[in-house]
Length: 112
Length: 119
Length: 233
Image (cartoon, rainbow over all chains, first blue to last red; front, side):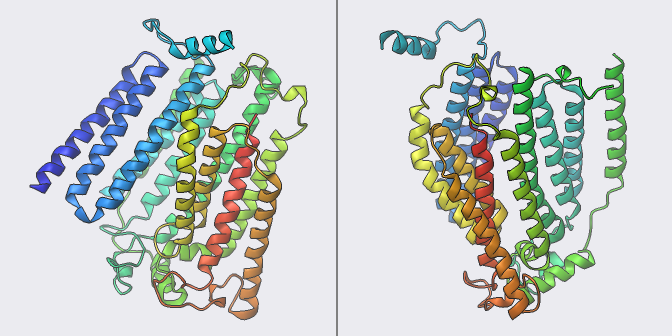
């Protein structure tokens, strides 16, 4: 029974990792690629490690710690990367309609 | 079988790094290709030391002192790679420092702009 | 055009050579003689459960000392290439970069939580070098990564260059002093039997290996932090 749950979780995690890789390949510009890569791969990590916890119940605390670390570091690092890319004006795909960061920057500079 | 797969992975990484170093014109991409060659070499060295159905050479609950010479993997290549990784980081740092200096001199990151050493 | 063809030819030749290497590769069935001697000797004579760290800090400790010298040279080289004249106009990377902006609040908050955790993790890796996978080099690299996080969260942060430089120098001097003590009190330079071997597998065991690991980790961590600090514009 535990093996069944573990296998389903591991398979789901692998599928999310595959979609992360596909997203990084096929997305039009840098920002959408970063979003696809981070979100899908963080979730894939969590699912794979959760599946391992069902297979080896003795490792549960260590695996929960690892999931916590991954959840803390992955989004923060991709956030820093995306802000740096926006600052050096990496071009966005023409389908983008809203640029909230640039509007917020102009507002703060114009208002202050 | 396992060590052959890891060996081929390391050699493929070295090949990709060589191709990248020869093709690209941007300095930063050449540095990344250099780092790839380094990583591929580390994987290659560790793969050479694998003993069939062996385990890590660390004595703990699962590997006793008496059984270690029979079941452990060769420790010498791993010891070589440990220092090689840190040295690879340091060499990449020097290359990046040179890239910054070159950019300050010519305001471009393409190596086609630096023609002083070419015949 | 001709350059393209030459590149393809070079890569194809390398690929051919590598394919020949991997086809004739035969997996080892038993340890080679040198590896076997090390796996037998290190736990019994030197009292270290981790054979790899035992090799790096006892039988091949002189090579580790040379490694430290190479790292020091690299740090000095980066300092020379990038330091130069501070505040000189030629040093400004580009006049077109936008004015520096405040670091993001998310990164700052995340750094407040993560830097202590990373530091504890680094100390754990360094201190457990002789018991399980780990050691001075690996822990030193993790210390440098916590320095990177600090710099990312607060770009105006000033590292105390004096403290880093003197810590690094003291760690190197102490390393050599432990080695000389090995000459005087035990069998040879950097022999780890200057301190008692203790009970196999406990924390305070394996002679001078934990002490050497700590010194090594401190030196490597300080060196890599100094290198990274130089890259700040």
